[in-house]
Length: 349
Ligand code: NAP
Ligand code: ZN
Image (cartoon, rainbow, N blue to C red):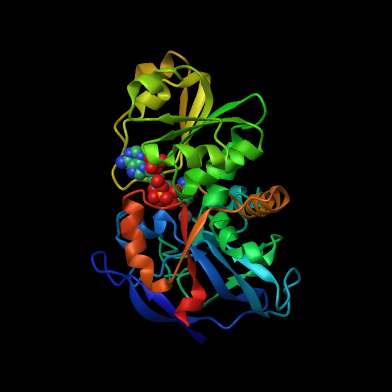
């Protein structure tokens, strides 16, 4: 066991505070990583404040982790001391159910072990990336091929990147397809960049008029202010696919109306309160679907990281010190992030 400095929520109502945790000594198939940067996902906030009603306290959030390997077990073959490595939202799964065998560990029949607050189905709590170090099975560590100078912008790929990449791939975003991205936050801005890089025609739907120029710079071909019914009406029946990243309850019907026949709107945002029930007629008259998608498997996460390295894609970030985290959460709630806070973990030492 080694001790590591961290930041934790001790209950749902008070700010995160400095906290000391223990990390296990690396076993034969483990890598130990000194965390250099950790992205701040809206799921961290949902968890710290028990908005999903399943938080185990103390809670150390953070699942967009990049760092340097400082120790490896003797059966580890893909990493050596000094390598860069990433850890996303999962640190374990059963390894033998149908989903695990297909490399879709996030849908493990027995419930994957989250990087933090996992397993929520029982067992010991896990502590995430708002800390100096982490020990993880080699099979759940990701290789990083980006230039080291871009490392802070790579961290958010480990959740925001894969959570948007996986559904965009699954529902066939690419040339000839019109893809809508709803919400320009951490996930949404990665969705815009990735859908653009995949060759789709991208329409961004935002509530923030101040984000129009950024939306275009990030790769949106068109930007629609979703609060304006006249602008929304222009896209009626136009879109093949919509990726909805909004972290708050919404009326989905105005978005469903934008789908073509057979179009799908996939929800990745996970608000604490449910969305308004969709109008059944909006679905059946054009055989439209509403779907959901959870992060992505380890193999696909590596594919996404390699895709991003090849296309020069990183997240647009605002680097922060660890003790800024509570202010960062408040700003995230006001949609005031451009477009991901990333903690410089050197500020925790
Ligand atoms: P974020 O950075 O806070 O971005 C959310 C964006 O949604 C905001 O920037 C804003 O964009 C829009 N928005 C917020 N409140 C809204 C409202 N009341 N009405 C309409 N739009 C609103 O959050 P994030 O980190 O991207 O996470 C988004 C959600 O995805 C969270 O619920 C998170 O827990 C979830 N998540 C899910 C998965 C998964 O596997 N499915 C993985 C990670 C995160 P505009 O200013 O452009 O309108
Ligand atoms: Zn996340």
